[in-house]
Image 1 (spheres, helix red, strand yellow):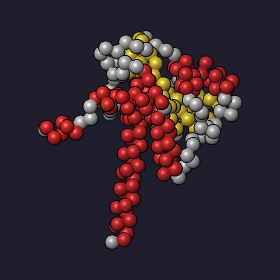
Image 2 (image 1 turned 180 degrees about the vertical axis):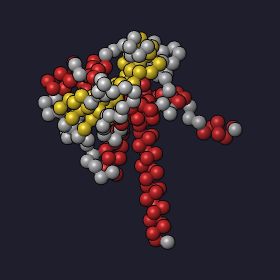
Image 3 (image 1 turned 180 degrees about the horizontal axis):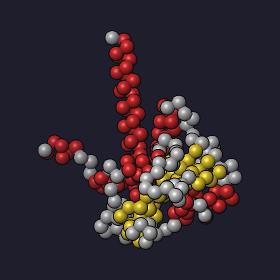
Image 4 (image 1 turned 45 degrees about the vertical axis):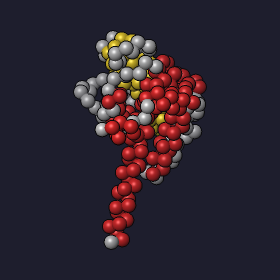
Length: 224
């Protein structure tokens, strides 16, 4: 027990580097590089041509008061996580805000926060909540990108998988498997965004490692 306790890095040192990487953009750059690598591993272009945007509302942990609000529609007192993902569900960018902030406003904040959108992007898919100010902002400021509504028809009841855009919902489900992300435990929204990107980085690394192991196993079987 004593040996294992010595191997644990001091909290202050870990948080220092996490905070430094978060503020300097290292985590965002690492995430984008791994997204490009994973796409190329699947014989796709490094940059996506179709993006999906969606928001997940989550409750906040205790002692969290900054950027927190009550969403009367879904009755969630907490924050909203707006994700921008490619057609495979890989997270390119994230914006965290109070749950009572309109999805369209959060979506615009996410796009503005990006230093650059992938050059090949031609379409951004979204649900009806983004059909107002967000769609107008994209049309006015990103002429080469077509905002496209991808939502469940009003006549349909229950769960309906939406073409391409369902991957954003799957990604929200994957985040729930991370104990640190079951709720929003971060006092600062920037840290909350970085934690989501770190979770995406971990998933991409796990997939890449598993594929590499499977590839080596196949080579060994063929050479045996």
